[in-house]
Image 1 (tube, rainbow, N blue to C red):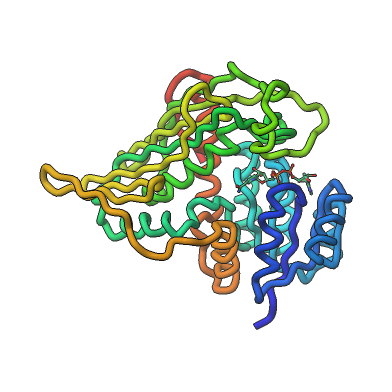
Image 2 (tube, helix red, strand yellow):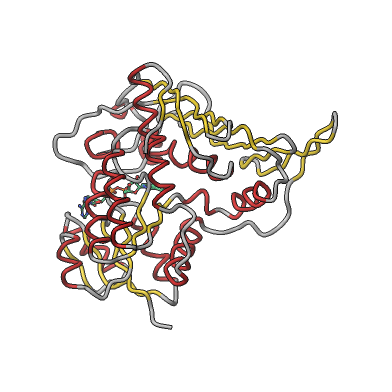
Length: 353
Ligand SMILES: NC(=O)c1ccc[n+]([C@@H]2O[C@H](COP(=O)([O-])OP(=O)(O)OC[C@H]3O[C@@H](n4cnc5c(N)ncnc54)[C@H](O)[C@@H]3O)[C@@H](O)[C@H]2O)c1
């Protein structure tokens, strides 16, 4: 079996979670990496023994027609241009979350992916955990019954990442697109990915950039994020709301980078026969007037970046459609964009994608 040839574009923080995964896989070979900050591309090339480093995706693609896969690890505003360039060159693409910094760009990505008939996977690691797949299997088998409700939260007390993360021209938004997206995607996935139809949300811009006064511990906990030109902190610091789906189900979400309340990292899905929580990992089965709580047994260990990338490699090898394919990536982006639209207009809005 010939090795799949991989190139990574964007050599910042998250790329350090991707490079080692490819290094471990026997059937892939890292052939090149690129970053507009060429020093970073060179550093990653040296650290992970990648033979070629470039300062642009265009140069990389021109010099390496043999590349099969482009892994996009740039900030969100570059996801569109890099994905489209890779797809137009016939490469399969795995792209970090969120799909892009806005819906228009995500729709353009979908057009390029479809036109070139290449495989696309959005890197949404939480849905690739074994525990998540255990619950999703129960949902698919009907063991939860009609799944009508989800609740999901990713709330930090103090945890604003640095650099571009809080500048919407680069990121597209604050905690909604940075961390909320992980939990929204997870809950939506567990619910069986029903078609999203509307959202009602609010967003807070009250606390803003507290970082100058953050403790050293807080700073360590936040993602660094590259310093960018024309930086201005203009994203929300918290958001909450709920989605309605075509099948009548609703999903409630909460997310924050700076919340004067408890930390939360939790996701639950509930049906008319049973429910499940991820944190703690539990199944709640209803029987008449009683509920039994069970902690599933099994080997649920595994690094979610490894599981996510292994899924993508398998899809490229077999031609299978990834779990978080371009259609789901666009729907997820529409859900995120809808949050901002609804918060701005102060009313529930219909989602279009
Ligand atoms: N899955 C997760 O848990 C997780 C965690 C953190 C970040 N992320 C996502 O990963 C992506 C990158 O985040 P990060 O923390 O690594 O940011 P980062 O700032 O550390 O790195 C981004 C890199 O992209 C480079 N870049 C920007 N535009 C480029 C272009 N057109 N071509 C080549 N390189 C370009 C920048 O120079 C920078 O080095 C974001 O989409 C973010 O949301 C995911």
